[in-house]
Length: 106
View 1 (cartoon, rainbow, N blue to C red):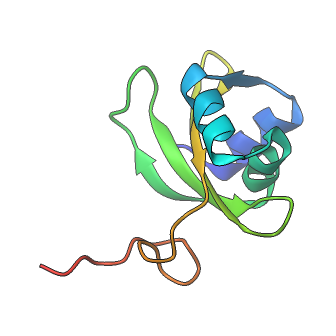
View 2: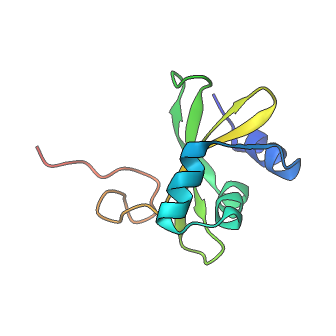
């Protein structure tokens, strides 16, 4: 289980591993590095993905520099914070606080 305190500690130490995937997604989605870091520093873990490879990961919900909602998927491994993807959550898919997925109609 990944705790936000561990994520913040690695942020403070600037111990990041920016994957090619997160870099491509950030470029496509017009997300800046400082937005991702800000979201991690002020966010909270809302989902855990213990079976992800090569390391367990989690979804952090936080705020970008402009105070807009931001989600970041990251994992911890080899003493680094692995950044996997980042996106601005869609209000149609998430609750008003962007911390829980809305139930889909069957």
